[in-house]
Image (cartoon, rainbow, N blue to C red):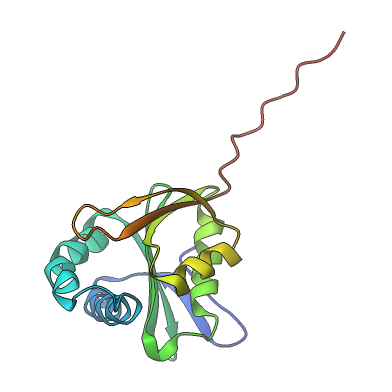
Length: 162
């Protein structure tokens, strides 16, 4: 599966080379909005490294409406390393659609987020993610939360009883 479009006209598809400028813009705008407790410099300093990570080392999917990229997700193995929706497109179900796509692509997901990003924290709790641990993030001192979805170990065949 490389793409699909739902009844509301939202297309989810694998990112293409020409999407990464928009992906970078969405990442920065959404990061600044969601993390107003951190200085903007924190995000500006990470922009190039994260852009390379998304573009060259991860599986990236975009959400698109009428040809406009409005959100994206990035996966590395079972890690959901990014799920961002452009601020002007938030609260329209796009993040939920992207997250459901990630769940369909991976049987287990883990992620990190800042605890002070309460909107995202509640979003993941609503989508059945569980808190695994919390600790201070090394650069900022703000609490980082590690969350997981479907963390149960795989079931093994039951041992027959005599």
